[in-house]
Length: 196
Image (cartoon, rainbow, N blue to C red):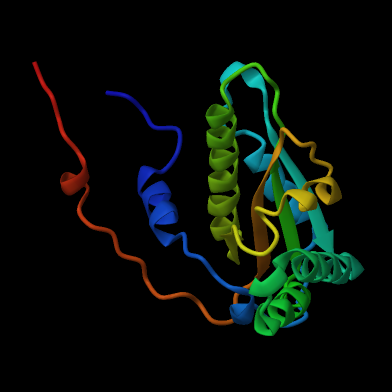
């Protein structure tokens, strides 16, 4: 009989407890210690990565940096939106960052050693490590691919080159209002077993 190193039931509960928690659900003004955020990122750093390219790149905004991020993303949106500009979106891009303890920009740095999709997949695994770590620490967060994520001109602000990808932002805070319990359709509807 194999002995498990970790409590599998706790792991199952941790995974099933992962929820997106949005800035309006955070405790206003309560800051997560930087040491905890560093540990969350260290856990993200242990994601699987083909050929050890470790393509994830993170830029962390906190304190006055949140205002700098808000000003950058709202002004870039205004510059690039053209006729699609919406004042409500501009206002949201300006007002949401200061509601957070930290915001982590998520980048994918191309190595050229593996297909691009494999590096995107590796970053996604890193973000899942981050997400599960957030839950384990009793914090709230969510991965947003909105705002300036897909605006090409945004990349350089986050230290990314033309071949790299900006894959969104992870918003962090202490939870004031928890998210509702999640649901999933049965795994049997999504799985085919082939035996023998």
